[in-house]
Length: 301
Image (tube, rainbow, N blue to C red; front, side):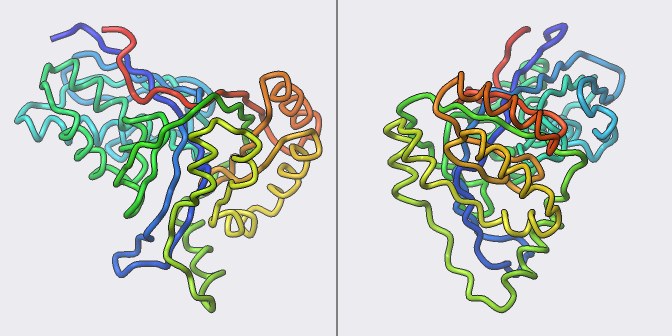
Protein backbone atom coordinates (compact mmCIF):
# COMPACT_ATOMS: atom_id res chain seq x y z
CA UNK A 1 0.00 0.00 0.00
CA UNK A 2 1.32 3.44 -0.96
CA UNK A 3 1.81 6.18 1.63
CA UNK A 4 -0.04 8.69 -0.56
CA UNK A 5 -1.38 8.94 -4.11
CA UNK A 6 -2.21 12.19 -5.91
CA UNK A 7 -4.40 12.17 -9.02
CA UNK A 8 -4.90 15.11 -11.38
CA UNK A 9 -8.21 15.42 -13.23
CA UNK A 10 -9.42 17.99 -15.80
CA UNK A 11 -12.52 20.13 -16.13
CA UNK A 12 -14.76 19.77 -19.17
CA UNK A 13 -16.67 21.93 -21.59
CA UNK A 14 -19.64 20.64 -23.56
CA UNK A 15 -19.04 21.69 -27.16
CA UNK A 16 -22.43 20.22 -27.97
CA UNK A 17 -25.18 19.46 -25.48
CA UNK A 18 -28.29 18.18 -27.24
CA UNK A 19 -31.04 17.40 -24.73
CA UNK A 20 -34.06 15.17 -25.33
CA UNK A 21 -37.38 15.25 -23.53
CA UNK A 22 -37.59 14.11 -19.91
CA UNK A 23 -37.72 10.33 -19.51
CA UNK A 24 -39.94 8.43 -17.11
CA UNK A 25 -37.01 8.21 -14.65
CA UNK A 26 -36.59 12.00 -14.68
CA UNK A 27 -33.35 11.95 -16.68
CA UNK A 28 -32.98 13.18 -20.26
CA UNK A 29 -31.40 11.39 -23.20
CA UNK A 30 -28.38 13.38 -24.37
CA UNK A 31 -25.97 13.75 -27.22
CA UNK A 32 -23.24 15.29 -25.12
CA UNK A 33 -19.91 16.05 -26.79
CA UNK A 34 -17.36 16.47 -24.00
CA UNK A 35 -13.98 18.15 -24.38
CA UNK A 36 -11.54 18.02 -21.47
CA UNK A 37 -9.80 21.33 -20.78
CA UNK A 38 -6.64 22.24 -18.89
CA UNK A 39 -8.11 23.38 -15.58
CA UNK A 40 -7.44 20.76 -12.93
CA UNK A 41 -8.37 19.52 -9.50
CA UNK A 42 -6.01 17.22 -7.62
CA UNK A 43 -7.15 14.58 -5.14
CA UNK A 44 -4.64 13.09 -2.71
CA UNK A 45 -5.49 9.82 -0.94
CA UNK A 46 -3.64 8.81 2.24
CA UNK A 47 -4.37 5.99 4.69
CA UNK A 48 -6.56 7.00 7.65
CA UNK A 49 -8.58 5.44 10.46
CA UNK A 50 -11.83 6.37 8.72
CA UNK A 51 -13.10 8.12 5.61
CA UNK A 52 -12.38 11.85 5.79
CA UNK A 53 -12.67 14.62 3.19
CA UNK A 54 -10.84 17.96 3.24
CA UNK A 55 -10.65 20.66 0.59
CA UNK A 56 -8.55 23.71 -0.24
CA UNK A 57 -8.48 26.27 -3.03
CA UNK A 58 -10.94 28.73 -4.58
CA UNK A 59 -14.52 28.29 -3.32
CA UNK A 60 -13.46 25.38 -1.09
CA UNK A 61 -16.05 26.49 1.46
CA UNK A 62 -18.78 25.51 -1.02
CA UNK A 63 -17.58 21.90 -1.29
CA UNK A 64 -19.45 19.40 0.93
CA UNK A 65 -17.13 17.44 3.19
CA UNK A 66 -19.60 14.71 4.12
CA UNK A 67 -20.78 11.45 2.53
CA UNK A 68 -22.56 13.33 -0.27
CA UNK A 69 -19.25 14.41 -1.81
CA UNK A 70 -18.63 12.41 -4.99
CA UNK A 71 -15.06 11.72 -3.91
CA UNK A 72 -16.36 10.11 -0.71
CA UNK A 73 -18.98 8.16 -2.64
CA UNK A 74 -16.30 6.92 -5.06
CA UNK A 75 -14.13 5.65 -2.19
CA UNK A 76 -17.08 3.86 -0.60
CA UNK A 77 -18.17 2.29 -3.89
CA UNK A 78 -14.69 0.92 -4.64
CA UNK A 79 -14.21 -0.34 -1.07
CA UNK A 80 -17.56 -2.14 -1.12
CA UNK A 81 -16.74 -3.82 -4.42
CA UNK A 82 -13.49 -5.23 -2.97
CA UNK A 83 -14.74 -5.93 0.56
CA UNK A 84 -12.46 -3.47 2.34
CA UNK A 85 -13.04 -0.53 4.66
CA UNK A 86 -12.96 2.92 3.04
CA UNK A 87 -10.40 4.12 5.57
CA UNK A 88 -8.85 6.96 3.64
CA UNK A 89 -8.25 10.69 3.88
CA UNK A 90 -9.10 12.40 0.59
CA UNK A 91 -7.82 15.94 0.18
CA UNK A 92 -9.24 17.88 -2.76
CA UNK A 93 -7.14 20.76 -4.10
CA UNK A 94 -9.77 22.71 -6.05
CA UNK A 95 -9.06 24.75 -9.14
CA UNK A 96 -12.12 23.83 -11.23
CA UNK A 97 -14.99 26.26 -10.57
CA UNK A 98 -17.52 24.90 -8.05
CA UNK A 99 -21.09 24.40 -9.32
CA UNK A 100 -19.98 26.01 -12.57
CA UNK A 101 -21.06 23.55 -15.25
CA UNK A 102 -17.51 22.22 -15.70
CA UNK A 103 -17.95 18.88 -13.87
CA UNK A 104 -15.78 19.78 -10.89
CA UNK A 105 -17.60 17.43 -8.54
CA UNK A 106 -17.61 14.65 -11.11
CA UNK A 107 -13.90 15.20 -11.67
CA UNK A 108 -13.24 14.75 -7.96
CA UNK A 109 -15.22 11.52 -7.96
CA UNK A 110 -13.18 10.10 -10.84
CA UNK A 111 -9.90 11.27 -9.28
CA UNK A 112 -10.77 9.74 -5.90
CA UNK A 113 -11.60 6.45 -7.60
CA UNK A 114 -8.25 6.32 -9.38
CA UNK A 115 -6.39 7.43 -6.24
CA UNK A 116 -8.04 4.83 -3.99
CA UNK A 117 -7.50 2.08 -6.56
CA UNK A 118 -3.78 2.91 -6.56
CA UNK A 119 -3.58 3.39 -2.78
CA UNK A 120 -5.32 0.13 -1.94
CA UNK A 121 -3.82 -1.86 -4.81
CA UNK A 122 -7.23 -3.18 -5.82
CA UNK A 123 -6.13 -3.60 -9.44
CA UNK A 124 -9.56 -2.71 -10.82
CA UNK A 125 -9.82 -2.85 -14.59
CA UNK A 126 -10.64 0.20 -16.68
CA UNK A 127 -14.11 -1.23 -17.36
CA UNK A 128 -14.73 -1.74 -13.63
CA UNK A 129 -13.71 1.84 -12.88
CA UNK A 130 -15.94 3.14 -15.66
CA UNK A 131 -18.87 1.10 -14.33
CA UNK A 132 -18.44 2.63 -10.88
CA UNK A 133 -18.14 6.08 -12.47
CA UNK A 134 -21.46 5.57 -14.28
CA UNK A 135 -23.10 4.64 -10.97
CA UNK A 136 -21.79 7.84 -9.38
CA UNK A 137 -23.06 10.29 -12.02
CA UNK A 138 -23.54 11.07 -15.69
CA UNK A 139 -20.35 13.16 -16.10
CA UNK A 140 -18.02 11.04 -13.97
CA UNK A 141 -17.01 8.53 -16.68
CA UNK A 142 -15.75 11.31 -18.95
CA UNK A 143 -13.66 12.78 -16.13
CA UNK A 144 -11.88 9.43 -15.99
CA UNK A 145 -11.41 9.20 -19.78
CA UNK A 146 -10.59 12.82 -20.75
CA UNK A 147 -9.72 13.92 -24.29
CA UNK A 148 -12.97 14.18 -26.23
CA UNK A 149 -15.96 11.86 -26.29
CA UNK A 150 -19.61 11.62 -27.24
CA UNK A 151 -21.78 10.80 -24.24
CA UNK A 152 -25.17 9.20 -24.94
CA UNK A 153 -27.88 7.83 -22.67
CA UNK A 154 -27.77 10.34 -19.84
CA UNK A 155 -24.17 11.11 -20.87
CA UNK A 156 -22.47 8.13 -19.26
CA UNK A 157 -22.13 5.92 -22.37
CA UNK A 158 -18.95 7.17 -24.01
CA UNK A 159 -17.57 6.91 -27.53
CA UNK A 160 -14.08 8.45 -27.90
CA UNK A 161 -13.69 11.23 -30.48
CA UNK A 162 -10.47 11.96 -32.35
CA UNK A 163 -9.17 15.52 -31.94
CA UNK A 164 -6.86 16.78 -34.67
CA UNK A 165 -5.35 19.81 -32.96
CA UNK A 166 -5.32 22.15 -29.98
CA UNK A 167 -8.21 24.46 -29.10
CA UNK A 168 -7.94 27.55 -26.91
CA UNK A 169 -10.62 28.56 -24.42
CA UNK A 170 -11.46 31.26 -21.91
CA UNK A 171 -13.87 30.53 -19.07
CA UNK A 172 -15.69 33.32 -17.24
CA UNK A 173 -16.48 32.30 -13.67
CA UNK A 174 -19.74 33.74 -12.35
CA UNK A 175 -20.64 34.66 -8.80
CA UNK A 176 -22.52 31.79 -7.18
CA UNK A 177 -23.55 28.51 -8.80
CA UNK A 178 -26.50 27.12 -10.69
CA UNK A 179 -28.19 23.88 -9.68
CA UNK A 180 -28.06 21.36 -12.51
CA UNK A 181 -31.50 19.89 -11.57
CA UNK A 182 -32.93 23.42 -11.53
CA UNK A 183 -31.57 24.13 -15.02
CA UNK A 184 -33.02 20.89 -16.39
CA UNK A 185 -36.30 21.74 -14.68
CA UNK A 186 -36.31 25.11 -16.42
CA UNK A 187 -35.50 23.38 -19.71
CA UNK A 188 -38.58 21.19 -19.20
CA UNK A 189 -40.70 24.26 -18.45
CA UNK A 190 -39.47 26.16 -21.49
CA UNK A 191 -40.03 23.20 -23.84
CA UNK A 192 -43.31 21.99 -22.31
CA UNK A 193 -45.37 23.02 -25.36
CA UNK A 194 -42.76 22.06 -27.94
CA UNK A 195 -41.83 18.77 -29.57
CA UNK A 196 -38.31 18.03 -28.36
CA UNK A 197 -36.33 16.13 -31.04
CA UNK A 198 -34.19 13.11 -30.33
CA UNK A 199 -30.67 14.31 -29.49
CA UNK A 200 -28.01 13.53 -32.09
CA UNK A 201 -24.37 14.53 -32.46
CA UNK A 202 -23.63 17.16 -35.09
CA UNK A 203 -21.57 15.75 -38.00
CA UNK A 204 -20.13 19.24 -38.63
CA UNK A 205 -18.98 19.53 -35.02
CA UNK A 206 -17.38 16.08 -35.00
CA UNK A 207 -15.60 16.91 -38.25
CA UNK A 208 -14.32 20.19 -36.78
CA UNK A 209 -12.87 18.35 -33.78
CA UNK A 210 -11.22 15.77 -36.02
CA UNK A 211 -9.65 18.46 -38.22
CA UNK A 212 -8.63 20.74 -35.34
CA UNK A 213 -10.37 23.66 -37.10
CA UNK A 214 -11.29 26.31 -34.50
CA UNK A 215 -13.33 28.35 -36.96
CA UNK A 216 -15.43 25.36 -37.97
CA UNK A 217 -15.88 24.33 -34.35
CA UNK A 218 -17.01 27.85 -33.47
CA UNK A 219 -19.79 27.60 -36.03
CA UNK A 220 -21.01 24.28 -34.65
CA UNK A 221 -21.10 24.89 -30.87
CA UNK A 222 -24.56 24.38 -29.33
CA UNK A 223 -26.03 23.97 -25.86
CA UNK A 224 -29.73 23.18 -25.49
CA UNK A 225 -29.54 24.12 -21.80
CA UNK A 226 -28.36 27.66 -22.53
CA UNK A 227 -31.85 29.23 -22.76
CA UNK A 228 -32.73 27.67 -19.40
CA UNK A 229 -29.51 28.89 -17.78
CA UNK A 230 -30.10 32.40 -19.17
CA UNK A 231 -33.69 32.32 -17.94
CA UNK A 232 -32.50 31.56 -14.40
CA UNK A 233 -29.47 33.90 -14.63
CA UNK A 234 -30.18 36.67 -17.19
CA UNK A 235 -26.92 38.46 -16.33
CA UNK A 236 -24.98 35.72 -18.17
CA UNK A 237 -26.07 37.35 -21.44
CA UNK A 238 -23.88 40.34 -20.58
CA UNK A 239 -20.88 38.06 -20.02
CA UNK A 240 -21.46 36.27 -23.33
CA UNK A 241 -21.68 39.63 -25.11
CA UNK A 242 -18.50 40.96 -23.47
CA UNK A 243 -16.45 37.98 -24.57
CA UNK A 244 -17.83 38.06 -28.10
CA UNK A 245 -17.15 41.78 -28.44
CA UNK A 246 -13.55 41.15 -27.30
CA UNK A 247 -12.94 38.83 -30.25
CA UNK A 248 -14.00 35.34 -29.20
CA UNK A 249 -14.86 33.10 -32.14
CA UNK A 250 -17.88 31.76 -30.27
CA UNK A 251 -19.44 31.88 -26.83
CA UNK A 252 -21.79 29.61 -24.92
CA UNK A 253 -22.85 28.62 -21.43
CA UNK A 254 -20.75 25.68 -20.23
CA UNK A 255 -23.08 22.77 -19.49
CA UNK A 256 -25.74 23.85 -17.01
CA UNK A 257 -23.75 27.01 -16.17
CA UNK A 258 -23.21 29.53 -14.81
CA UNK A 259 -19.63 29.43 -16.17
CA UNK A 260 -19.51 30.76 -19.73
CA UNK A 261 -17.05 29.44 -22.32
CA UNK A 262 -15.34 31.33 -25.14
CA UNK A 263 -13.55 29.63 -28.01
CA UNK A 264 -10.66 31.75 -29.33
CA UNK A 265 -8.16 31.48 -32.16
CA UNK A 266 -4.93 31.19 -30.17
CA UNK A 267 -3.26 31.91 -26.83
CA UNK A 268 -2.73 35.68 -27.41
CA UNK A 269 -6.43 35.99 -28.27
CA UNK A 270 -7.27 34.08 -25.11
CA UNK A 271 -5.33 36.58 -22.98
CA UNK A 272 -7.06 39.48 -24.72
CA UNK A 273 -10.54 38.03 -24.18
CA UNK A 274 -9.78 37.14 -20.54
CA UNK A 275 -8.57 40.69 -19.84
CA UNK A 276 -11.67 42.16 -21.51
CA UNK A 277 -13.98 39.91 -19.50
CA UNK A 278 -12.36 40.99 -16.25
CA UNK A 279 -12.56 44.64 -17.28
CA UNK A 280 -16.26 44.24 -18.14
CA UNK A 281 -17.03 43.34 -14.51
CA UNK A 282 -19.59 40.82 -15.76
CA UNK A 283 -17.80 37.89 -14.11
CA UNK A 284 -15.81 37.10 -11.00
CA UNK A 285 -12.79 35.62 -12.77
CA UNK A 286 -11.60 34.63 -16.24
CA UNK A 287 -9.47 31.55 -16.81
CA UNK A 288 -7.48 30.54 -19.89
CA UNK A 289 -7.22 26.84 -20.73
CA UNK A 290 -6.11 24.69 -23.67
CA UNK A 291 -7.86 21.54 -24.88
CA UNK A 292 -7.93 18.61 -25.13
CA UNK A 293 -6.59 17.44 -21.76
CA UNK A 294 -5.74 14.04 -20.34
CA UNK A 295 -8.27 12.30 -18.09
CA UNK A 296 -7.76 11.39 -14.42
CA UNK A 297 -4.18 10.16 -13.89
CA UNK A 298 -1.73 9.57 -11.09
CA UNK A 299 0.88 12.31 -10.74
CA UNK A 300 2.59 11.20 -7.50
CA UNK A 301 2.53 7.92 -5.62
